Length: 373
Ligand code: GLU
Image (cartoon, rainbow, N blue to C red; front, side, top):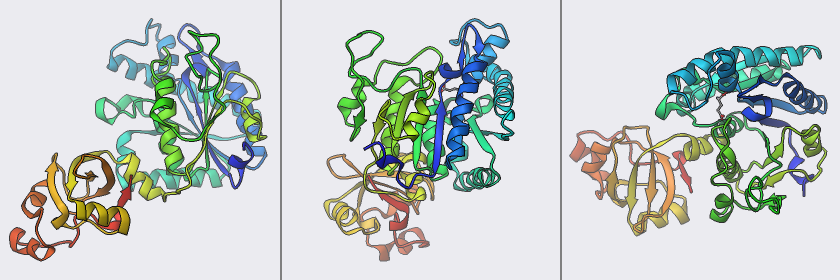
């Protein structure tokens, strides 16, 4: 089973949690960072291309600035990140330089992922770095990320990066051994779940309420990231990054941590982007005929099939399509704004020009821009 996830695997994203490489009281843990670097170098020596997503900037900055708690205001956290990020990347640089390995710093915001052009630009840069043999180290650009532009946690970011570069495996280094049947910190009898075939609501429930002090996400965001990866055909392994050798064990096919298996359907990177990365701005309700045409016959969505519209959106925004019972069946990029669509919903395609005075597209959402959920 474990060997199977390595079949055809060449490109890996390794996510390093804050508490794997830093602690609020002591700041960056250089030894831990060196251990991670060693593991990454071993993976690279075995032929894998590795992109790292590392947290630790805020915790490190808090320590350096002599601040006491992470629960400081957002501007203080951002200031701490600005101080800590330099420190973090310098420490990685040192950790890798003994082996003659170059690293690169990449700071991304959610906006970079939402915009298809910037998304592709980031992809070109990262793949070019990989071609040059450099190890890219990504973090959120915390300094400019507030409220809705924040990824929220680096688990989500790591999932997006994996999608960005078409990675075949996501390895999340945590400070626990994986996903447990109960919170291991509260129940010593909790058992490690070695394999998750599908992320069900029950699995997600196991992960709630386990957020830690140093990281923002805890297990819930890891499981959420694993769920998205699985839906796009990429497995995720959560392992204890504090344990030496756990990453090499994964790459040797040994049963460590929790593996979240990939679902069979493999979406293209662009479709995954539409489904999971682009934030939806509105919702369209489809009548039964349109829902069937979209779901079972792979058709585009026409105005005639839209019964109601929620939210305000522009041409090119992502929207969610639901059936009459409110179940989400698809997501896609719309060809008409919410106000234009409000005028043509329920009408035959031929009537679009008559009503709007123009007809740029026959479809509300073209099949190529639509993903079945
Ligand atoms: N970007 C944050 C940092 O480097 C970490 C966010 C997270 O903990 O997931 O400190």
